[in-house]
Image (cartoon, rainbow, N blue to C red; front, side, top):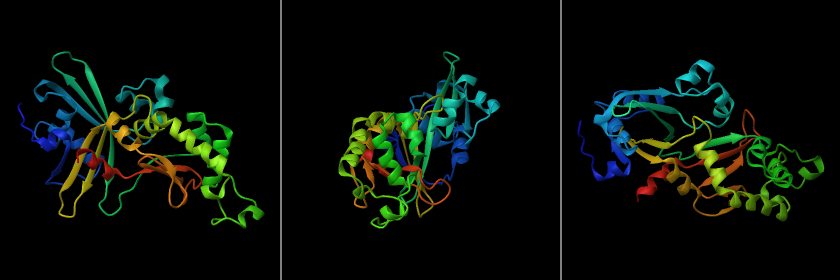
Length: 278
């Protein structure tokens, strides 16, 4: 099978005529790779020669895994806890290559973007959980808990706050906030890797962003996760205009709403990935 790809396809960004709305659509496209032009381009970007694929199976990864489902993804029982806690992949493509009969597994994180609302939650946990993951000191933890409202202000403290449920970062001691900024700046690689790639058997190796256009077409881009991490980590760590946190091309904020309103939430603009090619 010989497929000729144009320059944009080789870069991994193109507009397709038909839309594909969710994970199950993309799983189906991979399953039908022999006739599906987008799936053929995706596999080529991943480095596979189509005529050497002996067998391909694509699987949607559920939010929660049980032992039976975990085995389908090649996860051993001793890796279950870590995989469930840190997984970032939404689908897995399993390929058998003719020349060596080894099963190759490609884990893909899928992000749907909208032209009108270009924000996507990428990670959300309690400050205590992040402290366990990243080992920041208690000053950083306490500052972030005040920022998210996990630590509530007293009635007296709340009198001087814009939001009686929590502190904005400009309302906290400057030296404490500087410790938060310094921690994120000094640990960029670990933080961005955990937020975007994850850890364990279902960490993401690829990042596929789709954006449905008003004319019914869909624009997509597929990037190696290392390229995505480097892209989002570029730029400074600073306070936002509303005195939240800007971490490169990520934002960190109090989640708010329900459930778990006092979690620390990280958000990205998935449409920004299209800028890599420009």
